[in-house]
Length: 204
Image 1 (cartoon, rainbow, N blue to C red):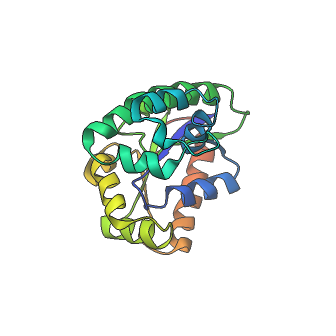
Image 2: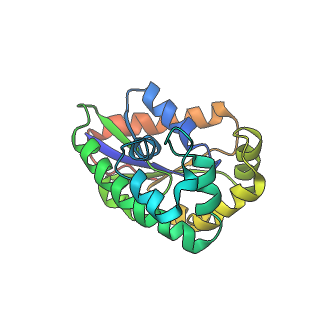
Image 3: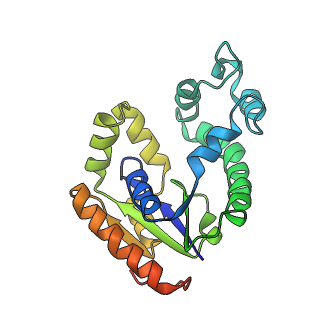
């Protein structure tokens, strides 16, 4: 088994690549899903978030308003740091558990947007970065995900720079072109991973 860390900036297309790897048989451990589980009513992180950011982040039914939390947490760097100080250790701990408990498979993918920023590369054998130019990232996040452009740019400012992310990569998937182009790169990568037999010697 080889544990792969999959990351990329907002709008780069990381989720698309994760889906392509899953279609080929990879087991996916999704950090975003872990985060959603942690902030469910009764979840390990929700009470801490309310203490830090106030009850306004809750809906009437007691569930988290992610839009309200995002508006507060990405309003300035210090607020983002407070959010990260709560969420990142909890996500990392749960990711370790899920990676350890993952079903037996040739490839287990830790799908983590902030893999580089949070220093979680030690959880995996290989880091794959899904890359696209920043203007493409913004366009996709706005037009495909319906996010506000200013919000997208604020989030990008607190993520690792494109250069830093690429410097941390063992493998780079260029997702600036068509879906077919990306799929061909993923297929080539999958064949190399399968041939490695669990070895980490997969070259860029």
